[in-house]
Image 1 (cartoon, rainbow, N blue to C red):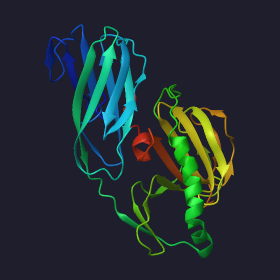
Image 2 (cartoon, rainbow, N blue to C red):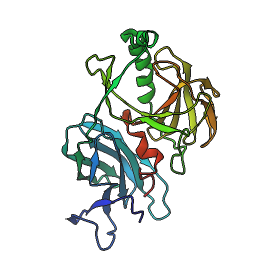
Image 3 (tube, rainbow, N blue to C red):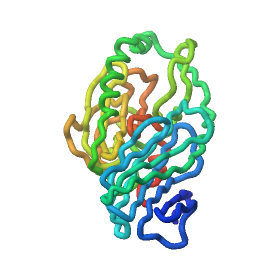
Image 4 (cartoon, rainbow, N blue to C red):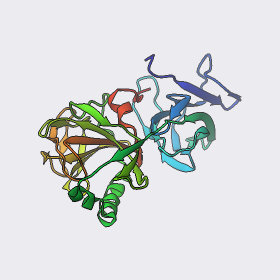
Length: 299
């Protein structure tokens, strides 16, 4: 087992509910497995549900939100399902239930839950000074218009999956701003939190697709600058913002490691850098966990 991950498993068999991983696998088990028992605000949790029987319906509930689960192939488990849970950065620290409910082909109703502890990530405040020209790009109307289009993209979920390996780094450089920082622009009140990871380097530095997928957005916006979104399937979307050049267009299919653009400072940017983000089932999460191969992808 990979030492980076702690697998927490609970399973039940219908004759006798069992807490903890059984010594042997019963013929009618329904099991939930999570990648960690505790996790910080803004991180990603992987959930697997494994059933002995084929399921007609399966649904996961977390923070009063319902999440669909996707079937994944496994040589030893014919009825294995997976989903990724993004922990919102503003989630109050504490213990939360993850509940799986389903119905199998025998019309047997199934239900099981586990607990995950959400810990405080200790996000700090960041002061940002913008030039007059860049300050004009903080216009709320522009931000709302661009934000609405981004939101509509994040709501989409492709039931197909386009990644078969861990995610790579999008660009070479130094991290100039981390995820979750509470930002103040020009000394004003805190307006938002940083939804991505800023990586600084020279203008023109190549930017790579972190994994395979489809480009669902390639645009030149006022506030976000030149922006690309890549849909990797199963609720995972990567975001590339402030680029100097776009080398792909909406609708293109890309491979992991393919050059998709050049680093720049378009939009609300003080200097040349890439704002790299990850959306997990419409929750913006810490990208560092993904590109450092600290998100469990496979059972």
